[in-house]
Image (tube, rainbow, N blue to C red; front, side):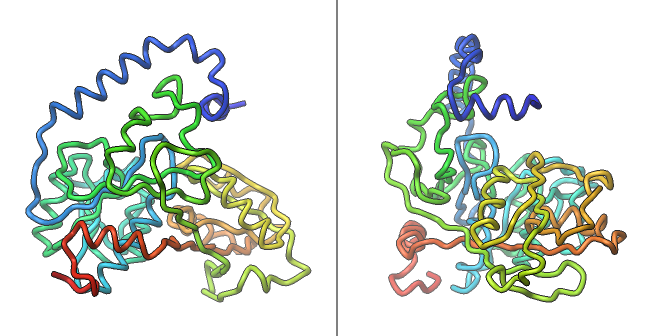
Length: 336
């Protein structure tokens, strides 16, 4: 068992040996509280929506960011996206991501957002600097993909996302548990969203988001095929995912009637040719996020029948109504 798997098992179960690190958790909580109270927010001059979470790892933030971008574009806004760019090595900072940017330059999620939404995306660990860069590009609304704990970026709205299946794990902060801030932090956010139905109750009410897929796109030919209409003689498939919770992707394929041979990887995994070994005997299904990094590798593997399964965030009308109300939008949804 890898260290990551060992930690995940205890973070989302009983801490066991990690109880010995309780003094470190207390120190972490103190430092987290100090960071929040001592950092001075920097105003960008335009409204800012922060989409984040209090647990380490993925929870479905990026699909929600994409949904917000598409929603406000339709209302006449000119949104831009702020991102830290996990693992990115940009030639300069802030770095404006385009459809031609590589994951090595910008990170996988910023590339995905730029390709899918066609809006300015700025990558910089200094989020206020990224925000200023986007304002200079003419953006009148900024959405931060992650950054709840980056208090130097002033925000009008905080949207916290949690994995409905995993919840808050064992409820402890790092290193005993998976939390970057204590559970009480959720009471201060504007909107709490659960990715999937909550499996355990929380003290704060949450709106439910469902990730909607159901269609696969061939990586090379762009042919589209529904998962429900997948050929019967090809229903045994490989599935590869390097996201926060790969099992969620595998389960969705199984529920669509496919027989999945799962290949999970760590979130933001840097793929190599070796990772594709033995995947040429059955169709390969991958997430849209993984496709950003795997496309160059798969282009040279004509023996692998690769398909991308994009997802969209299905959110209740109440979610958008709450966001619009906080931005001062009219009841008709028009841009103020």
